[in-house]
Image (cartoon, rainbow, N blue to C red; front, top):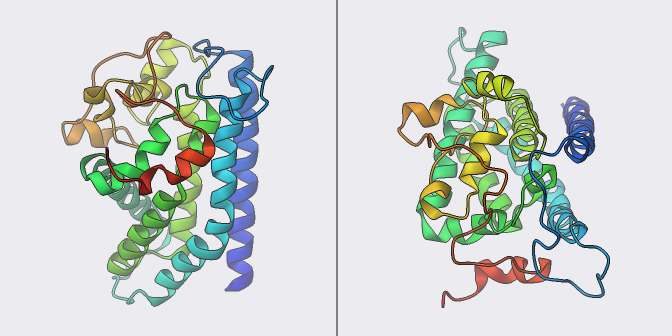
Amino acid sequence: MESELESLLGWKVAAVALWLALFFAAERLLPAAAEPAETGPAEGPAQGWGRWRRVARNLSLWLVNLPLSLLVVVPVTQWSSATAPAWRPEWWSGWGGLLLDLLLLDFLIYWWHRANHGWPPLWRFHAVHHLDRFLDSTSALRFHFGEVFLSALARAAAILALGFPLASVLVFETLLLLATIFHHSNLRLAGALERALSWIVVTPSIHWLHHHRVRRDTDSNYATILSLWDRLFGTRNPGRRRPDMAIGVEGEEEETAGALLLRPFKRAG
């Protein structure tokens, strides 16, 4: 079991790392929007960095989450999968069972995302992701460690309730990361291709609107992999992404990496 877990995690890390590298390079060769020279506060002697400060800020938040993933998220996921009661019928197995699991997990994460916007205690953590003043592939890595921890607990509860096998969870998490990197990216896509893809999966044109610095747009387009959930539950925003669209949280400004880590724990003004 341990060797199987290590093998699955290894494939997951390799696939995500390659996908991230491809999009990071491609979006700089074919950008959909021009990034402003400054997208946040300076952090130390950073003259000459310009746009790279934002990338460094996002990566630093990701580096904080790495040990948390290894020491908490993976063990909690493994434990919940091993502990979940074996109540599933025979037909809910094999490739058909895997597809059903992926559909259910995507459905559940849609509602978890909505909860992160609708419930203030969760929004305090999730806002750190939205404070990014521009989007590219590194934005997909930018999450507060508190949100990562709470998401791990919510996922464990779903695994215990529905008996998701560990393999299904790891496959879904891999697809989730690939999709998140894609729809946060600044890669320019042909209009016809993006419109066709948007009927099936969440594309940059859909998700960039979710990051628009206007709250009514931020509170829409919650889907992560399949775009059907927003259409099904009435949260699809019909607006279109514009290259000059302001990104961020309405009425708030970007902060340094250290301030972002402390932000959810500060008393609301």
